[in-house]
Every structure is written in C-alpha cells, then in structure tokens.
Amino acid sequence: MEQEKPIPARKTLLGVPYDHYQLADGADLYVTPFGRPFLSYLWPENWLEPEWFGKSRQPLQGTSTVYKLRTKPVAGTGKDLVVKWCRVGEEVPIDTCTRMKFMEMDFNSPYEEFSLLMEMRARARPGTVRTHKPLAIFVPARRLKLWQTGRSRSKMDGKKAQYLDVELDIFRQYILIYEWIKGVASTEAAAAEAAVSAGYADASAFARAMLERSMADMEEAGFHVLDAKPQHAIVRPRRGGGLLKDRSGRPAYALVDFELLARTPEYERQSREERRRIYLERQRDRFRPAEHPREFPPHLHSARILGVDYVHGDCDSTRGKLWVVGHDPHLFDYFLPERWRRTPRRSLSDTAQVYYTKTKDGIQLVWKVSQVGDPSGVPDTSPAFAAWGCNSPFEEFGFALQLAAAGVPTTYPRAIYMLGHQSTLPPEALDPRRYESHRDLRMPDGAPVLQRERNYITVWGYWNGTDEVVAGEERQRTHCRGVNGAQALSEGRIDAVQLEAATAKMGRLLAGAGVESSCLLATHYVLTLTPEDELLRDPDGTLAVRLCNFEFLRRRG
Image 1: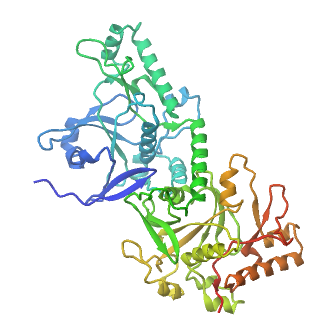
Image 2: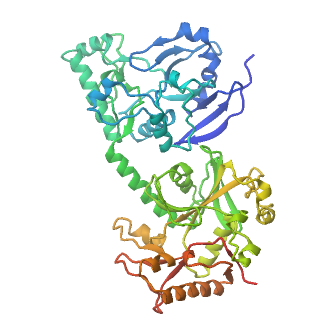
Image 3: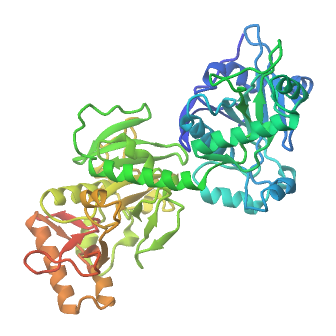
C-alpha cells in the first residue's frame, strides 16, 4: 500500500510555482507543474533508495555529478529521469573559464536554473528551443561539513545577496530532477553516423552546426549558456537511418545542462525596461475598474482594510505577508521582498529606519520600518504624541488615501510587508493599543492583520511626479524629485521664514481635511523640485508641500 503523501504548500520562488513537500526526515521536495503528474516517481524512496540508486544510475558525460536513472516501478512501470547535483557555490572548472576568457561566472542556484529555463521556454519561438522538462528539486535533510560540499563561502554569500529571501543553505545539497529525453548528444558516434548519412561532411561539421544553431535559437529568445557545448544538443537517430527532423526539415534537437544559463545583456536591459513600463501603467490604473473583472490567482486575495483596497498574499520566500494597494494582482510580484529588500539603499533619516532604493525592476521606492507599538519611538518632548501613540501601517495608508481624496497632496502608499521572523521586542514591551483596536481585522486564514510578534515595513512611491505624469513621460524621463523641508533649508533652497511658512501651510491643509498631527516636523513633508531644479509653487505663489509621514496623524477632536 502506497504511503500517504503529506499535503504540499503552494509556493512561488523566482516566478516558478512549486508544490512544496516537507518530508518526515526533514528533507524538502519542490515539484514544478511539469512534475505534478509524475509525483509518485519523484518521491525519493522510488529513486534515491541507496541500493536501487547504486545499481540503477548511469553516469552521463560532463564535469558535474549527473546521472540517468530509471525509477522503481510505480503501478507497474518506471520512469527515466536525469538527476543532477547542483554546483551552486562551487568554482567553475578552469577549462570552462579558459574558453570564456576568464569572464566572471557562477553556477546558478537550483531555483535560478529552473526559473531561467522556464522563462526561456516561454519566450522561445515555437519549434525552436526544446529542452528536457524540469520536474523537481530535492533537498536532502542531511547537512554536510563545508569541506564536503566543495563550496566557497564568498560565492554562496554572493548568491544570497542576490536572492537573500530565497532559502539557500550552504551545508545542504540540492538535486535537480529533469525528465529524460530520448536521443544522443550531437557529438556521439550514433549521431555522427546518422548526420553523415544525412549529408553532413563529417561528425565535427555536424556537431559544430548543431552548436551554432542552438546558440542562435537561444539568442533569439534572449538567453545564452555561458559554456555552450555541442554535447548539450540532443538529437535522435532514426532506425532506418538519418535523424529525426522538425517541421522545418532540419534535424530536431533538445537542449540540456542549464547550470550556466543566463539572460543576454540586451534582453536583461529590455526586460527591466518593459517590466518598469508595465508597472508604471498598472500603478496609474490600480484603482480604476477594469472592463472585465480581474481574475485573481489562487494564492492571492482581494482585501479591504480601514477603507483601503489591497491585493493580499503570502511571501513564500520569507514566510511573510504582503498587502499591495489597489485592485490589480499583477502588481503583487513587484513588491515581493526579494525585489527590493536587499538592493542598494540610502538612508533618509537620522532617527528612523527609512531608506530609498531602486528595485531589481528599476522602480524607485522608499521603505520604512513601522514604529507601531514601539514606545521607544515616542519622543519624550511630545506628550500629545505619547498620548496618541504611533499609527499602524494600515492606519497610515488609510490616512494617505483619504487625505489625497480630500485634496491634500501626499506621497503614494504602495505596499505593506509583514516580516516572516519575529519582532526583536518582546510582546510585553509593546504599546498594546493598536493591537487591541485592530483585533477584529483578519486575514483570509483568520489570523489578525496586526500581530505583536511581527515587524512591519511600509513601502511608498519615491516622489518624482504624479503617477499619471510619470507613466506618460517615462520615455523622456523628465521627472520631478522631492526634498523634505529640513533638507531644503540645509541646502540653502529656502530660509527659516519660508520653512516655517511651509510647515504652517501643511498644518492648515491637514486641518482643512479634519486631521491633525501630534508631531508635525519639517521632515514630514516634501517640497518638489522641477526638472529645471526649481522649487514648485502653487498658484497662490506659496511653496507646494506634499505630506510624506503619516505615523502621527489623528482625527481632529
């Protein structure tokens, strides 16, 4: 009787959806959509059981540890697989480096390899780039000594810096499982014999032709393999002689070995620009009703909290939660923490954790660690602030959108991220008021949206013009930029009298909307610099001010 399988968690890592199985011994199995129909074969006892693996594996050509393997019979039949030990963190062999003229290369992590391969398959012109299908990633529970892994700490640190929010353990092995493709490498004798009978001058001419053709097909799709070799192209000799052909009449082939697959520099640039353009247009339209109801994928949900509409879902890579402002589920992936959390950042405050960054998609953001519930963030000199406390991220976003609707200029709220790890402050040290007032606000799984044990980060649009203007002028890049009041004073753009007038104006705008701040400072609003580096003014001649801090707001009265 087949052993009952655990229920998987659905995860999306670097754009690839997986069924994640946590096994009883602590191992992990990540199954792709291609692998789901073959789950019984992929279960480790059906291919990695020591005695079976030892007698059934067939080493394949190459410098890596890779085997062809037929699984144990399931329902009377086995399945041919390719199992390959991932070399992430290891040194690239010197012969490969020599061929590439010592260009900087690192082996892909398992999740990178599957992600890039899936993307290439999706982009390739039909009938050109065929590959063996990625079925699963198996991560044995056993942790090795560093010397046993063959990995370099610096190389692994580099990979973690790129994808820090995706699990990558220097002491664990990663085994990639692919479907076996029938055929032989273009360099093998059977392929050479069939190629000569098909009209090629000799074996080397055929192998060279297949290499050049495969490289051209990948290049067209926007990819290249940094150590492309003729043996990576698999062809199929026919029993009656010659080679299996594709629809164009040329020898059909399929590619294998993607541990050094990468986007071409041109496609990488085009991809970022296209993602940024799509982002700006969708951000502009995030609240507009679509002509057709937006279809939410199973892992995302619509939510409405304190009057604000969100797209809500899990951050699989960090076990956190994410709320993205608006109705558009396509915006969700832009704010996953791996897109912005570890990109180069610049501090914007001496007293709080506020940072400017440009995401991996080239989008400028400001992110700020929320001080909700943290009494240490309350200035001793502000009794009103101490009496009110600090707003929750959901209150901040509610105020920002309500003020904007009332005609008060504000920066744009983008997303709220609840970190997966626990807060550094014990729950008993926190100001409990917001947690009590928010206790009835719940996520789809019933958990409260505001939890004492978690930290929160608010993500805001970097002020460089309205969403409508920025989306329309993206090609010209003639954007504004913001400086807060204190910064404008220190740079000599305004004097103390103008600063006081700007702060008073901000207070009047808030009062007109029925709101006040318990601690309104010159760093809580920005002034706008035009593309000509001049301060923007309103029609009445006064400096245009835009609120950028919402932690200390409250309703008047």
